[in-house]
Length: 173
Image (cartoon, rainbow, N blue to C red; front, side, top):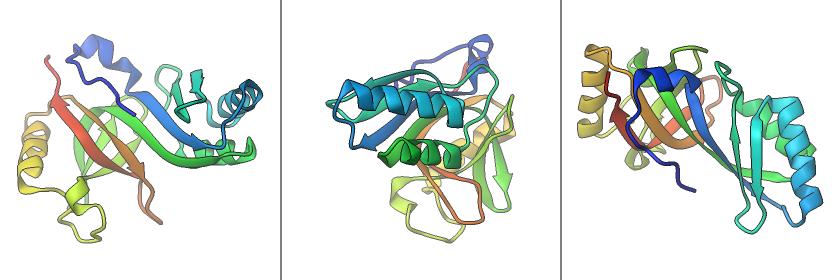
């Protein structure tokens, strides 16, 4: 489950949320893929869906300027008769804060993901990022630089979804 992280210019960043990959258990035949494709388009608004049966990976895009509703994706996969193990995506946006937590907010649709790293994924405290990563994010926030962050989505009760950072880069202007 890898998403490329090449440098892109601002004019190419309008997709905001891109590189969506779903880890789906239970896919075994082309009819399974068609059923999942149909539900993801109808219920979750995903577009350009490619199901890879052997890997159990479904890649999708969002229509330009639309955000992702993690709950609707989970519901669509469940309604199609499968189990969603994980969502990996790439967000292009600006660093923001939710209280003392760092977040990335998509510029066009306002979708916000709290940020954390693998080292801090089980903590409920505000220290959800290593010091080095926190400094990089704070720099991007202060400089008002557009960033590209890829990672695994983690849902929180009563909070915006989290994004466990796998790759981070400030985008060239």
